[in-house]
Image (tube, rainbow, N blue to C red; front, side, top):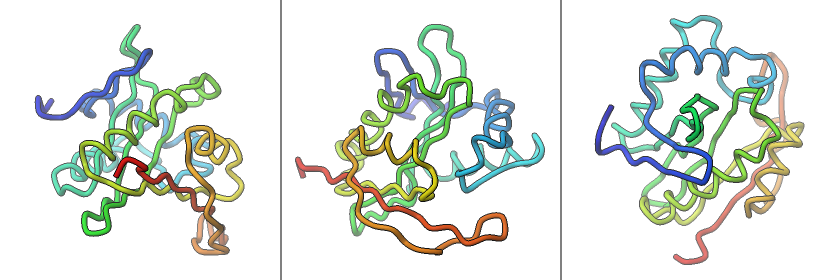
Length: 179
């Protein structure tokens, strides 16, 4: 584990760098039908899920993002992942992303964790704008973003193909009012 990797603590959770021991949990999340229903990545084997751990590490190495493993402070159990990617330094913007293992849904985790991730982006990375692109059918995610201060900006109709069908994406954004 990299000692320079920033950890973030909230009341109930610790956000830390991904470790090789997280592989099985990343696979469990990103192969679960309910998680990947609206998520852009899925894996059908433990070996393939190693790509995601590499992607998390490459983001920081290439200075294009940062993702954390979300863990319980109480028992250190892995809960999910969240972070910023597609950082555009020139335009001072990034894209937010997150997912949780299904047994942790509906417990207020993202409402507690995501503001800390956004604050990190604003304060430590100098980002002005954080964007969230959400499948128009993902009602819970859209409600969650609004609940933490993201504003709905519009819909891109039939802009991506998932599982052989076009999907539309709603755009949400949070602007750093302090900047």
